[in-house]
Every structure is written in C-alpha cells, then in structure tokens.
Image 1 (cartoon, rainbow, N blue to C red):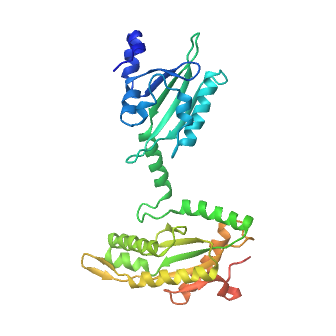
Image 2: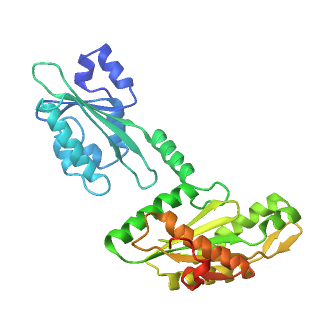
Image 3: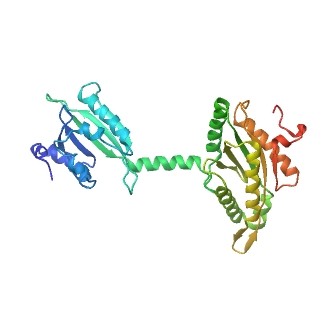
Length: 315
C-alpha cells in the first residue's frame, strides 16, 4: 500500500512505487519518513524486520543494531548515511551481502541527499545478486581446471607463491609433490581420449579424498599434477605421496567394456627460505620426478635423496 507521503507526490510517488529497488526517505536525523512498495514488501517477507524498518524508525539505529553475517557492512553503511546527512559527503554507496537461510543475496546500497530545505536523504537498496553470482562463477572458471574440477595452474602458482612468502617471513615448513601419470599417452591411444579424460577425473577424485583440506591439488596440464602441502616437511610429504601412489595404483578405471589400472610417479621437494619463488622448489621437485621416471616409474623420489649430479643446478 502506498504511504500518505507518496500519495501526496502523485506521479512521482507512483514512479517510486514502481521501482524494483528498495527505497526509503529519511529526514536529516535519519528517521524514515517514506518507503516505497518494494521496501515494504521486502520487510514484510523478512520478519521481524517489518516491525522496525517502516516509517518512523531510525534508519541509523537499524543499521547499527544489526548482528550476525553482514553486520560490519551495516555499521559501515550507517556511517556513510550519516556522512551524507551531515553534508560531509555528496553521496555514498556500498555493495554488501544480505544472505537468507536459503539464498545468497547481495545488494548495492546508495545514499543521495535531498536538495530541499529540511535536508534528509534518499536511500536505495538494489539487488545485484545475479551480477555477483556471475562474478563468482567467472572467478571460479579462472581458477578451476574444467576437466577435473581441481585447481588450475594459475591458482596453484598464486597460492604457492604466497606459501613461499610465508615460509621466508615466518619460517615453518611446506612441500611440493610433482606428479606424472605413467605412460598416459598409451591410455589415450588404447582406449580413446574420452576414457583418458575419465581416468584423469578418477585420479583427481582418488587423490582429493586422501589429502587434507589445506592441501592444494592442481592440474598443471595434460597428465601432470602437483600438490602443495603447507606445514609439511619433505619426509612427511613423501609419506603422503606414497599414500597417493598406492591409492592410485589400486583404484581401477572402469567404463564401458574397459577395466584397467594406472600408476603415477612422484617427485617431492621442500620449500626453503632461500627460494626466490615457487619456481625454485618446482625445479627441485621436477628433478626428483625425473629421477623417479628413470627408476622405473610408479614410485616416489625425494629431492634430498638424489645424488648431487641429479640435483637441479644452483639448488
């Protein structure tokens, strides 16, 4: 139902009522003097908000009394509203989450001063959920390998560089395990790329179940993978790699008229404070992986166990 103030405004009030954004008008103290239909409908659908967000309520108190998820943004928005009301800012806007128990929602709040003698402001809250969901999906696509669902090379390198920085600054341990699926070209040649893709997905699932939540398993490309293990030294990482190796070798690839096993080779190296970047540790892990392949594949090799001539130059 249109409020009396909106009715007095005639055409302008009808336009405001027709807008999808949640709109209210406050006086110079922040007390709500008008709301549009979308504002009323939203409050009615989100009790007990309807009892405290209508005409006569103090908008600043509403924001500052908020609790739970999003309350920090509500307090920040109240500061922005107050700054506009006091003429310390010409306008203000803020994107913020307002999730319900069943849906994730985001809004864009805007505050515009009323250019009239008694002051006040127009406050609007426009839903931007579709845009935010699209942004989140684009971020996900930029960091996830589409075939396996694992982290991709870009995400891994960014995350691993931060881990190198943490080790250099605070000490502690972290390690990498480079992984290569053995003779995988033969799988594609014998069974076709569709079965090969299924084998890659199966490998990702097997390894994902055996790793901790903090570990980062990523596909570097083709049949090459890597695991970042924060807080784990080389010996511990080698034990994890051996667990992965056994799990992979014991889990068959099963499909239409196919049933076979794959294996993988692992090269393990620890991140050290002297590393200039993650590329240094990747080089050591790659040297260990190369040695594992030359040793017959389907095994785990630690960089520290390599003979000096097999170690990466400059390590």
